[in-house]
Structure formats: C-alpha cells, structure tokens
Length: 196
Image 1 (cartoon, rainbow, N blue to C red):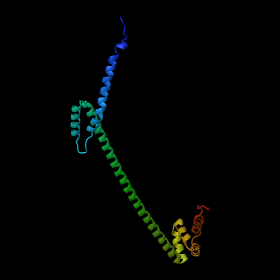
Image 2: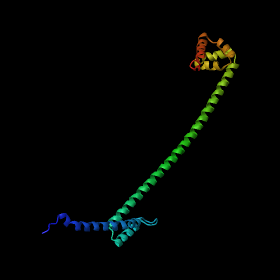
Image 3: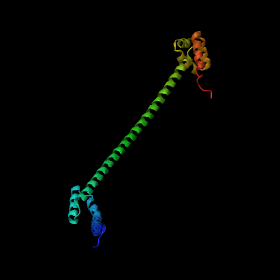
Image 4: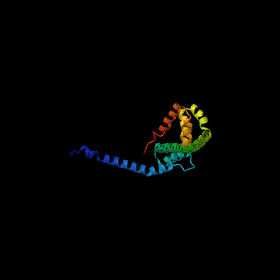
C-alpha cells in the first residue's frame, strides 16, 4: 500500500484554483478598460445616460454592475470637486479684483489728501507771510502793543520770520518781561535741531 502525503493529494486542486483565479483576473483586466471608457460620458451625455450605458455594457459582457456604478460614483464625486475648485478659484479672483480696486481708491484718496494738505500749508504760509508784512509795515510801538497781548510762542514765531532790524525795533518797545520771554523762545527755537 502506498502512502501519499496530503500536500501531494491537494496539488491538482490548487492548480485548478490558481488557473481559475488567473482566468478571472485576465477577464477582469481585459474588460476594465472598456468599462472605464463606457463610464466616461461624452460632453453631451447626462449622468443617467452614462449609467444606462454602463448597465448595458455590464449585461453584454457579464461584468458586475457594482464596479461600473462605483466608477460612475467616483467620476461624479470628482466632477463635484472640480466644480467646487472652479467656484473657489472664481471667488478668489473676484476678491483679488475687489482688493485691487480698493487699493486704487485708497491711492487716489491719499493723493487727493496730500494735494489738499499741500494747498493748506501753502495757504497758511501765505497768510503768515501776509501778517508778517502787515506787522513789519506798522510802527514799532503799534506792533509792540499787539505782540504784548499775543502768546509768547506765537509772537516769537512772527518775530523769527521778520527782518532782524524790524524785529529789534518791535522788541525794544515791549515790556522787559515780554521781551525776555520772546528772547528765550527765539534763542531756543533751533536748540533741538541736530548740529550734524
């Protein structure tokens, strides 16, 4: 009586099972590309038409419908993601355009404000120049009466811009206290300016 080992007895079964598996794998791989191609819609097709075509293909080729449906669902998800990305990109472009428009408006407002400040400074300088001309044309005693009533800082500003001879005549007619206060302010006017 000959004794065969159990591994040798099961060898034909393993061989048959392996061949069946390879056959199924080959059939699946041959039709998977066709199934994917059928699952892709033409530009004019609606998802329902694609699904119907896929089901017909499965029925003709004996492939499982679940594979085709899964591929179609995946395609639809990808299409939705693509739409969401397009929408997000559009929103970003609109936001960037709005920001650019706002920057242009801010730049225009800044330019207008700079022009307005320049005009105001020019007008103020013109007004000060005119007042200096008026005070310089007055008799020193009359101008001294006005300077006596002015704030010392304000008065020293005018005196500093006048011709030295005219400013000296006005200060000579001021009270000693006011003349001293104005002298201190005039002397310290440029003290904070760096020497270098």
